Image (tube, rainbow, N blue to C red; front, side):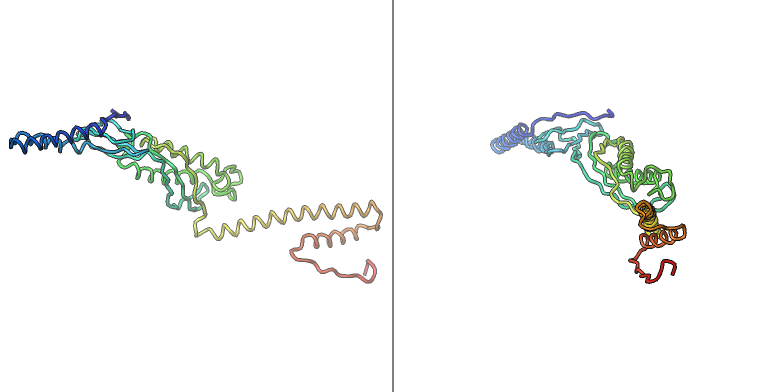
Length: 284
């Protein structure tokens, strides 16, 4: 037997009545007749008592008799089975696992800190009980291994890998799908179903976090400057064209160059410029 099978035990209420009647009748007969033979009924009723057990909602009991798997009870209620059965309880509820933040290297070798949040539940009680030694510990270790493998598949960002379309920081949907698929394949041996898996924490390791932050800030500044210059050039071009079309002033190439220089300074400066009023001619 290498797969789960459902066991349908006897109702515990019926057996409770039978065991109680056996105990009471044997006790009364023993008192009345003083015959030790009736003590056997009392002993049998006491031996039958360990066979009673409860199954709560979304729980199960795996039944084993002298090393042989006898099935799993998944129905809720009060039951009785052979008192020599070992009745291991396995929860069927969905569980959360928030892994520790592990330090790994991404695809390009940068040290990063990464953690995973996993939602899982037991679907095959036979595999959970007998295919692995401890299924809860198995989930923890395999989750750590899956996170390490995932981090090595993608760069943290595309600073050093400009051709990377998917990164750990930007491609969360694709990365989480890959993580979930990897974990499902790993935990299938233990009868575990992965309901959801996603990255819960992601950051550069402390030794490079400061440098990477400055790099991100520099990239943002360069991108902003690029946009400012593009806008300034368009505005200067539009201003010169309008002045020429409306014939407000006749500008030669030298004056155009001076005007472009002044406008670019005004539009691209970090601080407010201070105007200088020229009280003479344009040439002085």
